[in-house]
Image (cartoon, rainbow, N blue to C red):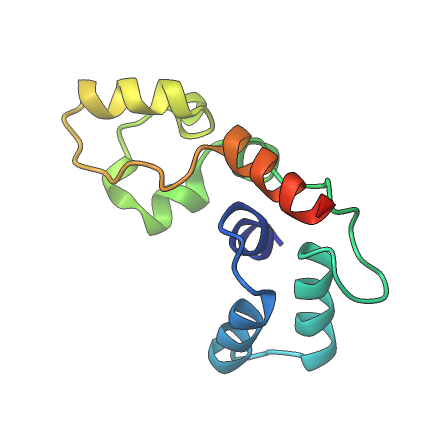
Length: 123
């Protein structure tokens, strides 16, 4: 859901692109669950999330991966970074500099992307 909402609302991409990618790559993909989940996240379809619901990736990671173990499993270069910094963009920037970790900058800033998505959906 975090990925679906990020792609469809933060990046304003057509939800069908992500839905197609996941169905082509999931070993246990279920058409109804995948399609419905993408539609819900993108605020389309018959049972859609309100258009103004835009998950904050940092607060979602804090809620569901508070220790950062999942993040570190797939981004081992972030191993020295504190769990607190993994869920806070400003602290993360600071710790990346401190540990001299070469890591990409965010492609969008949550508050600005959220405002842009809400404005687009209002139209």
